[in-house]
Image (cartoon, rainbow, N blue to C red; front, side, top):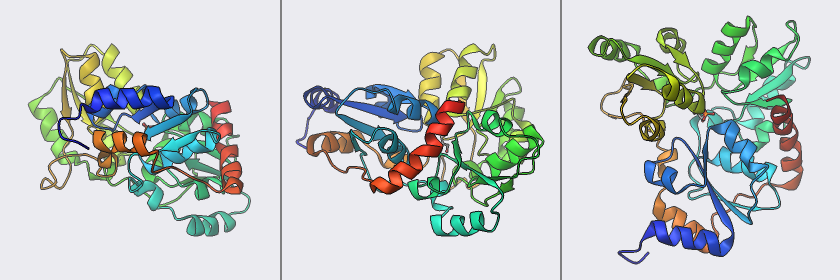
Length: 310
Ligand code: 13P
């Protein structure tokens, strides 16, 4: 890319020329969120993927988000800025191992978090995101036998609020597992009026002290309507960009991770995406998400079921 290239202008030009749209998750950097046509939590992005009219969709997030868009919008070209943007949760659940787990419990309905590979979705009855997991689990009879994978923290949380005992896969998100209860409580001492916001992928000790638990979009909406002026935010720090935009008069403090040497709570995968990579991916229409059609068709069913139930 030539030096002094105005990436914002060039990306806008390429988008128009190629009839492309840019979708971004809240964990992207602020500059990416600012040029996106659509920003959302995982559910909103999946819903948008069924409606967006364009020839090309650039999904700025992690790999499973690109796959979800491609599964729901197979006739479009779906590009991602960096194919290496994986997800620790999706990686914690290899399809062959998950299949053994599912086969060992043949009388169970399989509920999978959207943070999974397309292959895991083919083994799934219904997909959920953090914003609809409770509602969808509640749609099953109280005595239904359920498997929930791969996030044990979200699974434990849903078990606790629905009074269920779903069988859980033992996976976790490397960012949300890192939040330190001790450091959050110290921050709370320094900022006694701050409310603690937590994503349900956090460990139960963190969720216990949270004033509000929800998906990225739910937490963002909470900050817009709350009377509080300060918030301690226990999720990936990218969401704070949008929180500050809507509520410039409020203070948002990122919850600290256990390992202070890493200094931040960024998802290294989400942050692989850059403006330069978006420009290149629009220009060269690469890298593209491709999914074998038989896998795509099987993976689409539990996602469509989720959309119906949401
Ligand atoms: P949301 O659906 O809350 O945006 O979840 C995103 C996510 O992947 C958390 O790790």
